[in-house]
Amino acid sequence: GKESKMTTPVSQTATKNRQWLLASRPVGAPTLSDFNFVESLYDGLHSMGYKQPSPIQELAIPIILNNRDLVACAQTGTGKTAAFTIPILQHIYQNKQNEKGRRKIQALIVTPTRELANQIDEQITVIGYYSGITSATVFGGTDGTEFGVQDRALRTDGANIIIATPGRLLDHIKMGHVDFSKVEFLVLDEADRMLDMGFMPDVKKIVSELPEKKQNILFSATIPDTLDHFFKALTNDAVRVDCSVARTASGVRQIVYKISEEIRD
Ligand code: AMP
Image 1: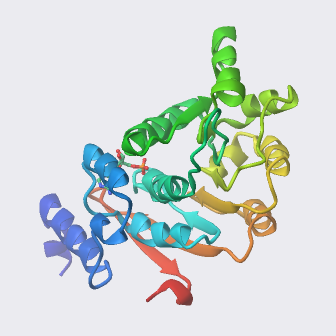
Image 2: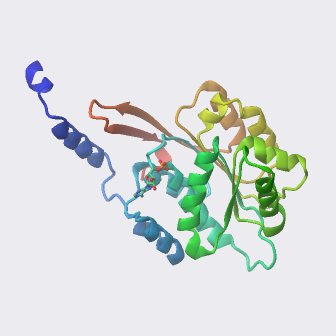
């Protein structure tokens, strides 16, 4: 009855929720070694200590590996960053030409804050280390020296992956210094925060500079109507991963993922 519920110890509740989370994983849930990534990528994942994919990774990684556009609802703390960085690193490794000279930007990740940009960059640096894939950050609020460093990364040294906040990237674009002609992946990370922070006009200008033919990977904790319209216009036949998130009394998060029929098996 009511009374026994009230006296349920927090630890027991937490355990129950964890079982619920485990029970919600598909039968035969994969480990990261089931994905057949290149060895050098596994070396990077090993450095991070990742063994099992998180639920969002389990869903998103195969979709991105299959070259599909993705609209995914995921909160910070779910492992959403690796859900897009891992398959992008795998793709870039496979598509890497025996390029001499400067690297071309193959993936652009746009994110609302410099802290997020740094977190994403740090993860890519470790996971991509053994694959020889390089990344660079471009964000505002830094002094003139940093602008020069960013400018060199974009123009001279080159990087496979650029992680940027919208305003500063647009400054570099306006100077005519960014070559987006080889971009194969666009990631918008925490799109709802970019909307809240008033960055959408800048994001749209950046998107208009990118090749039409590319894979669009869009992550947001919530998808209000304005974003939904923008996402629909941007993507081509996207797979959507929707989730409803509830916080329990013990602070354990329960996540229900609803995915479209075609990727269920
Ligand atoms: P995020 O939601 O991307 O901010 O990630 C939250 C935390 O989970 C970060 O500290 C990641 O390093 C960590 N993480 C992401 N994927 C995995 C994984 N497969 N196994 C263990 N930890 C992970």
